[in-house]
Image (cartoon, rainbow, N blue to C red; front, side):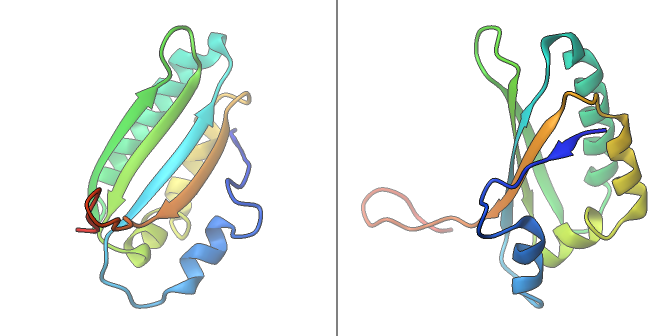
Length: 127
């Protein structure tokens, strides 16, 4: 089963999901995952299964898994949800999804965190 380590020690994932009760803005999950080289195949199988399951959930928009270049065993999952509430119902509040985390190799360390786009004039937009 994977181990979860908060990306931000001051603002936990649980706190993020309770902060906004009724929101209608998209939210981005960025999840940094580390796994031992000998467990990569098992990790990828578990992640693919979870992604297929979540793809069917209301509010799911998209996901993409990235792997560090070279022999890196650092992965980044970037997922877009319609709202924090959709994300929470599909993941943290879903016992089926929570039990699926047991399939991950014990060497898996996940650091999930929710984000929203930030607008910087002349550089990037928030839409």
